[in-house]
Amino acid sequence: MAVLLLTISSVLAGEPYKNFKVAVYSRSYETAKIGDLNYIAPIWEEITRQVHVDKIYLETHRDLLIVDEATLVKAKKFFADRGVQTAGGITLTVNESNNFETFCYTNPEHRKKVKEIIEFTAKHFDELILDDFFFHNLEV
Image (cartoon, rainbow, N blue to C red; front, side, top):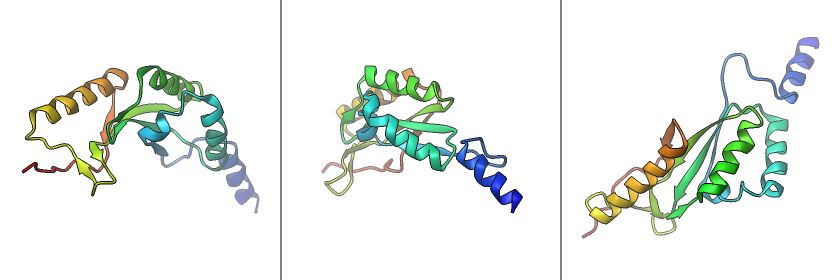
């Protein structure tokens, strides 16, 4: 019983886990709102009451929504102030609601946009992850 109570109190205190790390992912829709502390503070408080988070992937693009630079900087600071590592995330969708439409990599304009998105994200993070929408929609 004492071991169980110590384990529970460790989790509730938000201490790191011994054998694994926890990472979460913020879609660009949510990342774009993180600049507003009234939005993120209560959400983050609820999450960290339940689990210790070591890293958050902040998505910079999804469905042609690119998180603005000022918001991204605020988001990174918010998590850094709480000892949480940040990394970039990218979803290469153009319109998810249209059968998960992605960029067409044979289209020069689409490749140019993808390059801009990746360069923007790499400017802010040493690490980035491509969400699972890295497939090809061929324009015909």
